[in-house]
Length: 255
Image (cartoon, rainbow, N blue to C red; front, side, top):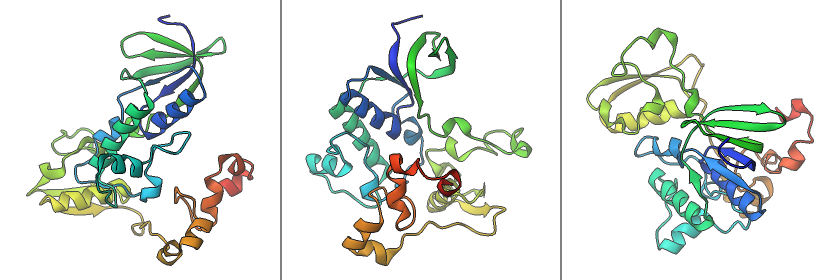
């Protein structure tokens, strides 16, 4: 056992892990955050922009003061919408510095429970013991390539998460399997870089995420019907943004 047990172990240093650390620090909770900061985001394709509205693109701190708007205002920068990936990464680094978050870049290999405590095995062999553990590792570890393509070399078959510069497909024919957000974004960015792109999927069509323009255009209706996160349809958006209320709903209704 390397060090004394801690209260809370946070696995992942992306937007959720960093936001959680800000709240734990404010509450005086002994904790540690593990993983390369914003790792999944630094690997995303160049040219990408955030889908979320500006009001929903900030990390969370207890005072609600360290917003992406505040970052741009302090630096004298113009905040673009949709927010460019590079601007979001710069903002996240500013957030870390302002809060004073210390991130341990080592990865957690395994997490087990023994004698009522969590035991995290780090990549270098050290073991961290904690009373509580929060997993905020993101989706990067769950990439999946269909079995029919796994034997092909990476130059012929790769995952969308493997590319942060889709310019490598310039002048080539590219087939993208899937019609989710990553697939459509990669298709658009690769096309802009000069690739000949075809999107292949089994669904009956692409599920385009749209916003109710006329409801959002009214400041009064927008504030009444939608939470700042803008997640969910009108009315329900307010409920899902209040976890203590949302968890009281019956499981079927929550789904």
